Length: 238
Image 1 (cartoon, one colour):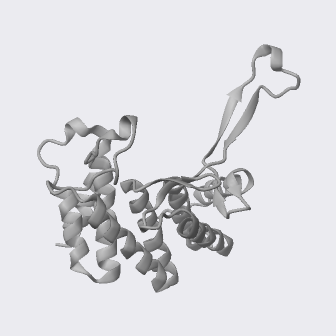
Image 2: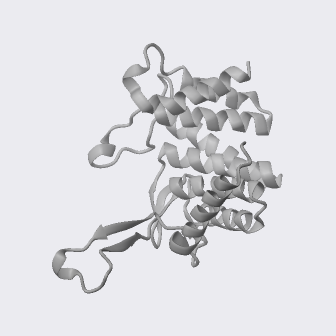
């Protein structure tokens, strides 16, 4: 947007950090995070006051957002290695982080774990559509469509919107919830898919997410941000 070199340098520094510290060469994807912890006074055997711990889980939602950022960087910074790394990571997620019924799982740590969360299907779908828009490879569009169908079959709330999980589990996952932030992102995914596939059925799917919430949105706070963005995207297509 601005073409200011300072922003390009900041992006390059972020990419360099990810490549040096969070990239997993064995899978081609990215670790969850690097936590920095302060040492106790008796542990200071060097000048370093902090030590770091890597979360070596590969989270689908975090990786897909990283993939989209790398694909954007490949174009904006004219850096083809970002594109190669993004597409490699995307392929790993698709091949190793899905269940037999086609659902994306939430994370990978030696094996794929926790299947059927709405956000993981949506974020993966968005990354696949981004890859399709850049490469024009129809397999990415086909994969995004498959995830959309999973959402429509397994996560659709008959009362409106989409549930956050496929199968209830223990503790906080014991109940299926229809959440405004997640439905906002789902609507954006469906709208992008409708455009890419030239299929109005997915625009209807986006409206199903949006129509589930109305009235005063102030009580939702920042959770309404993605929903508001999706409303604007829907209105632009009217």
